[in-house]
Image (tube, rainbow, N blue to C red; front, side):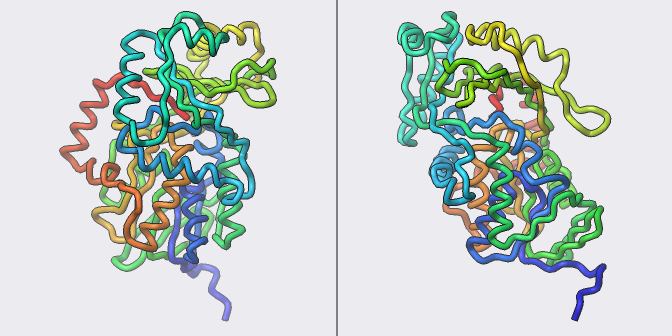
Length: 394
């Protein structure tokens, strides 16, 4: 018997958002035999997950994320088996630079606090930094090196997760904008602008910068901000930089790929009236100046392209990850604050565990949506106003 055209499609899990988090969740759910439908308003992996800097780093993450980022580190090593490509992933090392002695002291404190998490952080003083990384500005106090951190190509990796999920049997509906999501006490019904209606026992809210609206629609408002990290890429240059680097306190990050192009980020883009984020002209000179000052080999190089993306960010720079406290079957995974590329696969695995097992093998209590109940919401907003923003987007 044919299903009526306007009848809802039934599935066990519906995922809103086809970035690296949602797509990896779909893949891990299919590997456990769960029926899953994934919806994305555009092409999977084309938003934040596909246009980010490409950093795959553990260094610099909060202590609460250490177990999460450690599991992600293991999964990145398994990338070819998971999605059929290495995504140009390399463990180049991640070098976090210190401008001042105070910055270097902060890096030393972080190294001491994260002992036991197998990052093997190496503190490097001024003289050694100049000897080992002579292409850097001489005006630095030192650095911290995480030898096994690295980078990958987000334009390859993020869509590949969705393609692998589809190959494993997930129903992937791209260019499908969600207009309404409700729960009747038993199941969710998700309505879309393009027509398909999905009914499911579980809804995974992986919608990135749009996920806060979904959470609010189910009675769990959060202070999610929307950010637009600014990035640029140069013409191919002679190889000089083998590591991915960032700055203590933020401001600039950079890496060089095998083809010789240097990918550099720092600053913010702006949202346009047409709904797309674009580089802010006022921010370009500052980024160019910081890059030339920090990396003398870039002086005189041609920039091929500037771009930006759209990402969700939380005041404490921790994701919202875990079950809803109000709606059974609703699970949130968003607010990755510009650093979700590395942890995305691990979050996808956690989401599959929450659906199938009802619990996670990795502690996620620090990331619960309940921390943004009304009193916490107000406190987080006050903190956000006073905190120096030092996010290193990756």
